[in-house]
Image 1 (tube, one colour):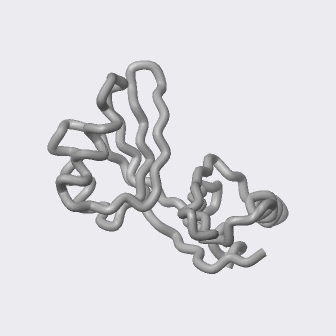
Image 2: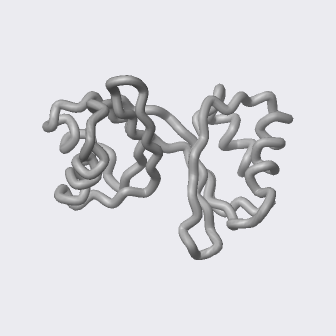
Length: 133
């Protein structure tokens, strides 16, 4: 497996009301504050919206989002930049599984230039990062 960049990072878990327009409101708040979004996962659970985001400036993002009254909690995660090819996710899963590391959740996407950014929250992020380096 060709892994170019593995980092331990902080993602922001933003809890919002689950209502029409919230996606645009959260991302618009970041855009108006001049904050580049690096990774994003969004879901809803009942009355709440849940945004998992990694930005170029998490402190500035947290401040901007809290001014709107949203709850913002930092989570430690592992980010992995890999070549975008069939089977790379399975290889990462096997490596972490063989190291007895539980993946709590993961998300990612391709940047369109043959690279993918994957985000993992695991039972042991330090060990996961070391395993994937």
